[in-house]
Image (cartoon, rainbow, N blue to C red; front, side):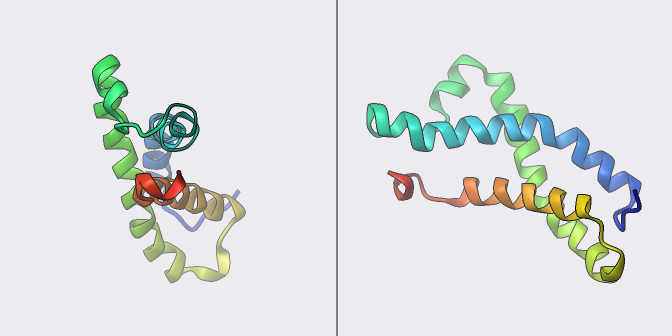
Length: 109
């Protein structure tokens, strides 16, 4: 499969994605389902106190995934005629991380 993104950028995404998506999925769970069932939550409080290493590295990966589309946009714009479906999927997953992160906690309740 041909990609417009350089290999180093795709490798960075593969390294950031697993932990970043696990972390943001847990945050989304706390913002929605847990809040609906148990009332207002201190989002991230339980993760930080039960699994602090996961919280720290998950947050770092999450922020990396939030910066990743800014870098990839340069390559996507520069060679816009050769964009593959995988390039689009990687960027859309990063947009998912951005949206979940920036949505206010009270917005989903």
